[in-house]
Image (cartoon, rainbow, N blue to C red; front, side, top):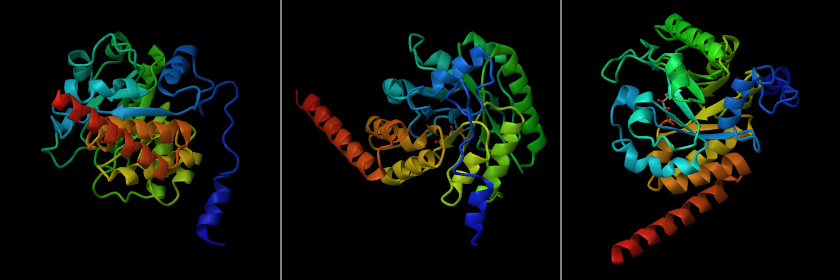
Length: 302
Ligand code: 5RP
């Protein structure tokens, strides 16, 4: 029997983890405030989320597509389920009347000028997350990285603070350059993050065995976007991830670096919440993009 079949049996892919009394995996025994914050991020109708990740500035500065968040990202807010950003951008650029749930980047340290990105610390107090009415916080965990123990400890301290305040923690699998990005690695990293208390995990998609990563992780997984891909490929990746058990996406560059970010976020949302197939989602993207271009041409002609 091929290895993949044996793995399928061991992960019991045909028997989803039970979630008695609440719709999100592993969240049914959390306190009310924590559940309520989770329910703001993960749409109770689909059980999934489209988080828009724009936290990149915390180590990359004004990266491509995020030079002017007020112009490029604020107009997209109505189309996402939640925004993943830094507290600096939240306070300075995101309108306080915005009712979208905010998940705040809570780690930082090295910039892209350094080789070793795992040298992070907690970069925000839980008190401030509560003050900002955050729906959650996110932190990198570098399994196998040079500063693995510190990054795990950063996360567990944040989880302790989150449990005191009722604020969920999203643990993010940060992959060092030397690490192989395969299902074996991500199963290990996601499971460690969940075992040590994170309420959900952000991780990358892999073509082979992604369903074993979601099956062996007892909390919801959201798919990280990664580097910019052609739109059809990004939509296919998001579709495959949710069909294989991801509870949505936390995508950045594949949305804000698209030639048509508004069209792309709406196509991603159709994939995530309505199970739209990749080719149909791409058609939706193209028609929304064409509408937007026609609208812009008409404005220019007036
Ligand atoms: C890295 C992160 C990022 O800072 C960011 O959220 C990545 O988003 P994307 O890869 O979709 O551009 O969490 O792990």
